[in-house]
Image (cartoon, rainbow, N blue to C red; front, side, top):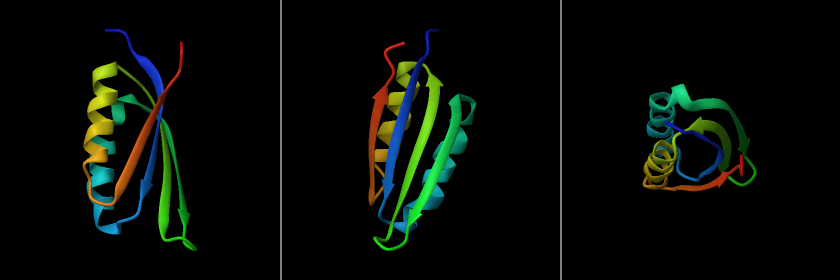
Length: 81
């Protein structure tokens, strides 16, 4: 199956969703190239970037599940390769 390279950008505004977010990312760990998280304490948010190489449907499923978490925003950018 053909895969795509993408970056999933996540903003967490609700700490109660953090455990579920980490669980989702662990479930998709086979596709994760790397991730970076930055706590922005002054504004009370966490900024997370996750680089993935996965089939389009897996990326969409992960983004959709992340976006359904309370207090979490997500956007996905795909590489053209």
